[in-house]
Image 1: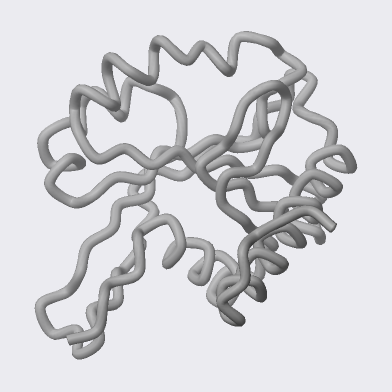
Image 2: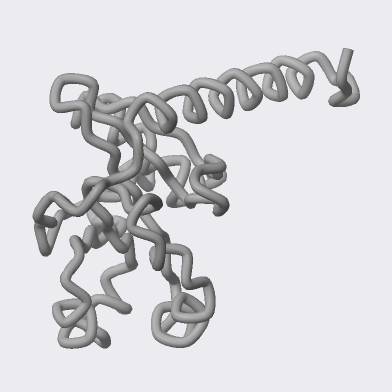
Amino acid sequence: MDKLIPPDLEFILYLRFKRGLLACTQVSVGGGIADVIAIDKNKKMVLEFEFKKTSHDLKVLEKKKRKHDSPYRKPHKFYYVVPTKLWKREEAYLREQKCGVVVYNIPHNSLHGKREFITEINCRPNKNIPIDYDYVYRQLMIRCTSAYANMIMDCYGRKRSWY
């Protein structure tokens, strides 16, 4: 059986090919590293997606990050991305957070193990001095280029190195 693609990587495929967004994992923005950053080039909006697998990670560890305290750091839209089991367990808590929520699962009838991503709570845009779109666009392109270069090195069995 084929190895399952990690949820965050499968999600960027969904964002690119189903939603028409540019997206990448582990993008450095505003002093932190986002699990997934996406940009909507038509609306000039920045979307951040934070993946959570457990209640502890969602409720305890996320509060310690405090990465959204600065008004200059906030994306236009922020979403938690959680598996179905966590959504069912923490729905009330997630609804209180005033952010978007995307839920994923692997349908029983999926022949290839592809996940479904369903937006359970849509997010209203942040109007309070959101993060600079052009800055995030540059950071996203830097990260995508680095990821692509690393993939090429991995394909040819070469050590990742700086030239």
